[in-house]
Amino acid sequence: MMTAKNDLSTPGAAGAPARSAARLAAVQALYQMETTGQGVEATIREFEQFRLGGEVDGVKLHAADRKLFADVLRGTVESQDRLDPYLQTQLAEGWTLKRIDSIARAILRAALYELIRRPDIPYRVVIDEYLDVANAFFEGDEPKFINAVLDAAAEKARADERSGS
Image 1 (cartoon, rainbow, N blue to C red):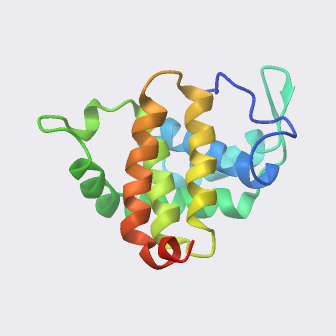
Image 2 (cartoon, helix red, strand yellow):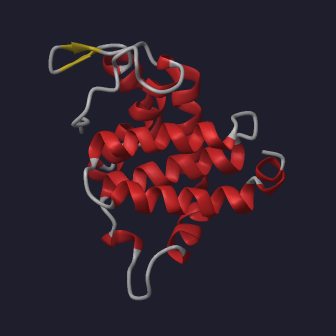
């Protein structure tokens, strides 16, 4: 399992700890699925049985919101053929989605899924939570790129919500 460089399990983590833990786990699960070829249902079972609320490197993690975890994972996988073309339009000419780091791809896909299919979650929460995940894995320009892509996506997917804020 891919682990974050920063500990998102501490009580000071942004947002409700269980929802934050679910998003981090969803990104890790998407990464695992891409690298191993494991299916979504098997991955959900594995994470629910062994990883959600467990320990990583001796650090006890917050119990994850299992419902949000499963929804984000299933929804991202089911929507990937609609998410990836949008992501491709955000890349510089000559770049392909495969050239982006696999964790960054997982973060973008999961966040886009929530922006598009989860209007019950405010767009600012979605962006902030996935930026926290990005900052847990990256120190360079990746979080800035992720922020720019998610902000542009929110402008399109949540125009009404954004204009009211």
